[in-house]
Image (cartoon, one colour):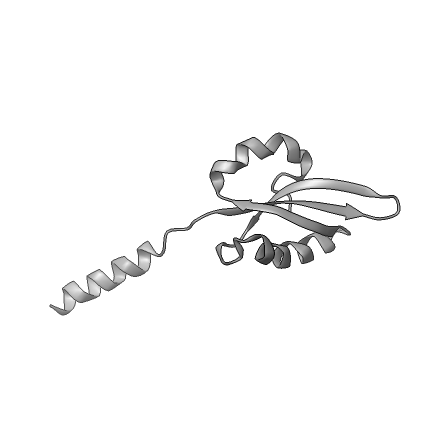
Length: 94
């Protein structure tokens, strides 16, 4: 009985939770000279709402001199392909 319980517990620990994917599309700016960009970034599942994604993305962008203007939306992997061309160099960069 102990072996069955130990095997079951080990199997559950190794399987782990299923990982969902969350992404956000956003707009950012840089001053002097003014530059704007639209981008797509992966955010943690815990921050998969526009408001929560802002708090995660803002420091990432700031580290490279960008100011987050707003998060437009959050979405799953099904929305990546349609946004890839629009985001260009800023597709999954931050």
